Amino acid sequence: MKFYLLQASVLALALAVPATGQSQKVSPPKTVYWMSAATQSGFGMGSAPSTSDMMRMAMGGGGSSVIKTLNLDLGSKLPPSPAPGAADHAVPPGMNMGANLPLRAPKKGTPSQGTEEFERPKGKLLLFWGCGETAKPGQPVVFDFARIAAGEMPANLFGGERVRLQRPPNASTWPTYVYWPNTDKQNGSRQVPSNASLVGPHKVTGNFAPQMDFSLQQDWMQGVNMKQQKNASGSVGLQWNVVPGATAHFAQMVAGRDEGGAPVIVFWASSETQTFFSGMSDFISPSEASRLVGKKLLMPPSQTSCAIPKEAVAAAKDAGLILLTSHGPEQNIVYPPRPKDPKVDWVQEWSVKARFVSRTGAIIGMEDMGGAGGATASGKPKCKPDAATEAGKAAGGGIGGSVGRAMGGALGGLMGKKKPKEDCEP
Image (cartoon, rainbow, N blue to C red):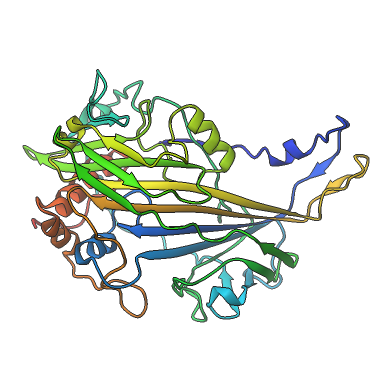
């Protein structure tokens, strides 16, 4: 099941028709390189909470208030010599991460030999949307997971405008693929320092791709500082700072609880039309962000406030997870540059896409919990096996345990999630 439509690659077609109207033959690059830079503040996550995120939120304080992450994906139609493919990215001194970041091919996984049963989904989903102290008429829309699992798929579960997401190179779409971070012992998984900067000259070399020399002018985005306030009406007001370079904003809340042994998922989105896990927290191109702002599925970059309706807050039992995404700019480089003469074919050798996003999050009712508190020297938080449950207790109401069980039992089961080998009560 797919929750969004994949974005078609239209860049080459758009560039293929110059201002003169005369057609120019364009050959797309055989090697593409994507740099995905994210800034995370507060409860730093993209879509759903992890144990580490829960611990960071519960511990609060200490460490940097902003975390920078970077994912590098290099795909090519050219074969490596010798195999496997490997590349090195020489970064600017301002990155403070050494001279090179090693890009390595993924290791072939061992096929699973397990005979685990799949968990049959049960429970229901309560769907809310739109900023405002009061939910619009007709909300919530209620979906029964058991009926969906039986084949009664609601026509409007994923209704509304679809998001055209860009898909970075991966091992299934490119014959040769390498990435970072990875398991290479030499700088393969180093945490990005808080003072790192992408601005400056970059060079990528490998045993399969042509050398790529380029320069970036765009850097990690500024962190998002989100504040929340419980209003007298019962709604929760959200406010955040202006983020330079932002192209749009998207807020959402997700909560889970047990109701008679069945999970109940509460989902709210800031979109003015019905939206459910549509990918609007993922990286979105500036052109797509502009289109979605026009459709009122994303908030404009100038907007700095939104209210979660009181009905959604009440349904979540005042224990939801709030996520805010500020979409950012892109820098696209194609080599060689386009010939000015339309009669000359444009044979592209390689292209680079650097894309940016800034995210933050919080638990309803908890303030000033930003940062990566409790991190070790390696950047990984100190965790206990029941970290999510402990974080839930700190938040009040056991949000960690209830959300995890509800999301796993309902949404995870709906998507074919394997039943855990053991279950326990917090």
